[in-house]
Length: 365
Image (tube, rainbow, N blue to C red; front, side, top):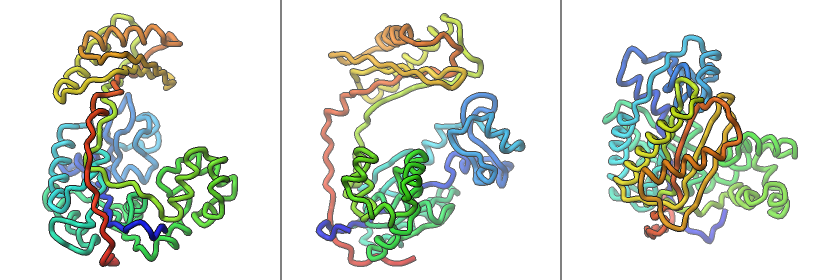
């Protein structure tokens, strides 16, 4: 570990199978059953209950594959307004303890509780209180990881899931990371893990033996990241004001589209929806991207960047049409999406002060 950098108390809170758990909570008939949030005949699984996960059903899996793995799987249509409503309640609980909250999605966030509003010294106790309040107010369970940085907190939150928490103490960081399988390192995907296995790197201690030059040669920019995190070095701060980098809307269709008129109608509808979302928050952008997913799941994206900001549904539609004309294939379309990036939010310098205070105590669980 880098002893020159002040230690912090970071909690990563992750809701357990969030969308699926909301559905089971709101409809008791679904409790204890294998359910998937998503469309049964088209699209992908947005979330799977723990009962469905036992059969190998995972989020982002095509619905058809999920049904093959678990024939008795029950599909439930997503209700994003409901998930957002509960997510807001959960965040209100976080803010009772600290303003240094960095949401990653509706169902997970980092909290820096080095200094906190309740002046509780034990980060472990704070995590327990937060999880208890979430359960009392929503009926849902959450898991938490507690450690000295975001990387370790994120890894820790997975260890005692569901409905558990794990603390990695400052004095246990080194031994914990040395024994951690490389596929458990946050940021190491399946492809990278397989490459590491082929190089004889199975655990943190194997990764630690490699020089920074060696890792950079093998894994490019990520090499330096792997070199540091296996030594417990990860200085990324909890950023309470995450600046939005893009806004996207997309639709998966129940029947594949091939007709040009249908495409026009869908692009027009997406353009209007994108404009509505941007208008509400006074957001503009310079880069428009069209996303096309074909019936065979092949993906095509193409972008146009302008000097001036896009500012109307008509502009999104006309530019989307130009990008559509550049598509490489005339195949049935399964999904269409439009997204705007290079946003004016990049110009808003939202600065947060991060408190760096040494640990007084890091209680074991």
